[in-house]
Length: 293
Image 1 (cartoon, rainbow, N blue to C red):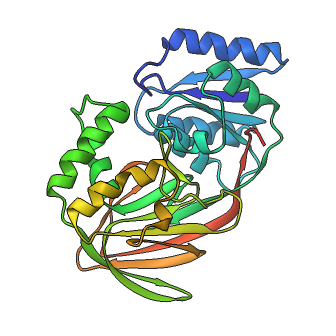
Image 2 (cartoon, rainbow, N blue to C red; image 1 turned 90 degrees about the vertical axis):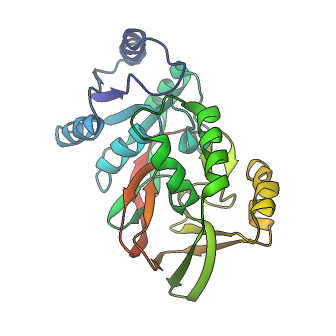
């Protein structure tokens, strides 16, 4: 038995949910698979559905939705033998893009059903697991506003508009970051902890990150001038941001990040209010991913 969990509101141009349910059932049946297809009805419902599928011994659980749905389902399957697949339909689809999962739902679902599952790392910050990225600073600030009730501007255009407004007012904080290799202090625009390379929509914050290397990429982008920050933003889309003088990247298994005040952070785009000290670590091979090789 496989389980397919569909978020009906993910993305800006998703096909009607009834069509998605029919497509999921048809593709599973064509491959001789028995499938339970569920549609989420509330926040965190995907997590509960994934937990139930895991406990009932599902052969595979597929998340059909955006980064939030992917994160909910994947982290619920962490440390279990149940593989995880993705049908991307969100605004950014960062992990799905990095895994080269087709954007077409039929091809993505077929790929998940036919893939040989392989190990994938997970990250953790302040006790919260993440599959793609966690971050502190500007991206967490924008994520909080992007996810705020009443925000109707979704997709890349909406996110870009919020980021542009945030850059006009956001004040970077000073962080102390301790790893087994030493300690650094920085006035940073953002501190990203990357399991894979990109935010989504092709923006690659950690070009060298790999989901199966047993490490996380710690990316520190310092701000020396706001004009310089604006001029360097295009480097996100060329995969060369780590070559900039104000950007440093370290491969880490764990770290502790402290600041002079409680920090807002995000896990896979979900904003969370944390304390003045946050512990980060990697769990190598904690998830089994069913995606194209």
